Length: 264
Image 1 (cartoon, one colour):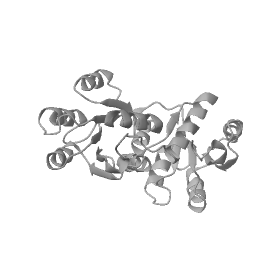
Image 2 (cartoon, one colour):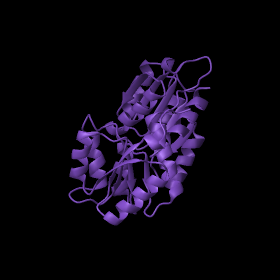
Image 3 (spheres, one colour):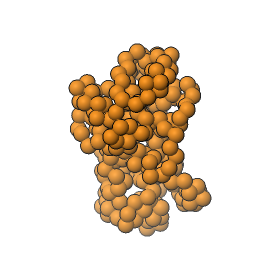
Image 4 (tube, helix red, strand yellow):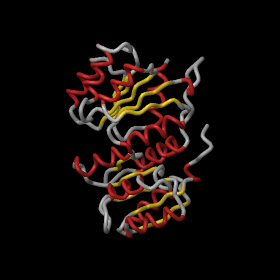
């Protein structure tokens, strides 16, 4: 059972509309959140975070001076703020707005308007991110598991590594693209490979094909993380031997269960 509860979360709500501030704050109160700070723009939010870091930032997309995307990117570049959970509330659906957010590692992207159930689920995901359950691997212990993490975005690798380490995995190697990953696979043994799909030089699909058909580790479990919307291409990858495919942003508890199944 988790020691951290929703009632203990400290949430910073970044929203320029006072009406929306009241609405979202009211819903958070109804769901049990008691500590809520408010900011109307990104710069004010950053100043508040630097003084007293929250557990979770919930932000609108369009803010004075910067977007919600730019806010989370700036947070990820500051060591004191880099690991704070982030949730976006926006009616935007465009790739150019949302893809950088997915790559930065966000807990959830909520539509506007959203439901109480969606907010509840996102708060639960925040608890899973802040305090994930340790992996249960039978006779093995998580600190024995060797993982290769492949993603061209440093922020994505940092976010995923942080989640894995909280689950008990200590031996994590990183690669920026499929070419680097292929070299590491040729030199070292891994129990699990987690790779992004879209990468320069060699993408996730090509890497999977190499591992399955040309490497000495053809049976290693491979998890594919992607925000790709081309479902037919992903279906083909699923048939090629990918152990599991999951989207960004992903649910931490679901990831834990998938890793446990992959390593069973």
